[in-house]
Length: 157
Image (tube, rainbow, N blue to C red; front, side):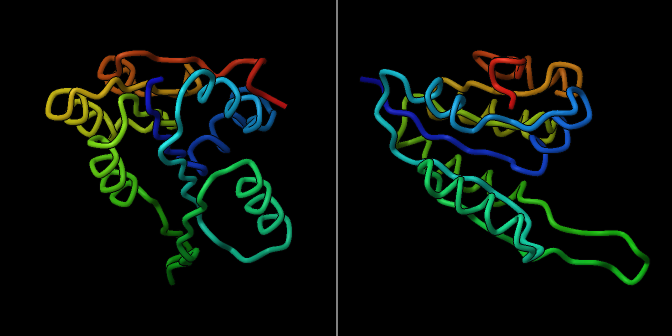
């Protein structure tokens, strides 16, 4: 069986599914689809931690599904803007797992990951599947992937 590693940009998936569909992403349905007839070598969900009870409950649901949840603290700047993305962390982990997995699954629409996807494919011969909301996924990311899987009703709650 093919070995798969999964990387979820939680904030990106949350906001893009909410904006496009006014629904939540179905992580259980996704897990079933992404791991079907594959051996899982790693599954990571990257999120920002505000410490509220709803968020803690959601993080526990992700852990119960099988994800390792990686958290960064939410940082509110003095000018009112917020900081907290996982682009570098996701990139480092994908590069590490590109040597351990045949397939890299990335859930994000962020075009900043197109270079990462190119690198995983060209330097490590990984097959890269990108899941994203079609209208909110960068065309450069879609083009960089071996497969783009549109988040649609079957992956929504």
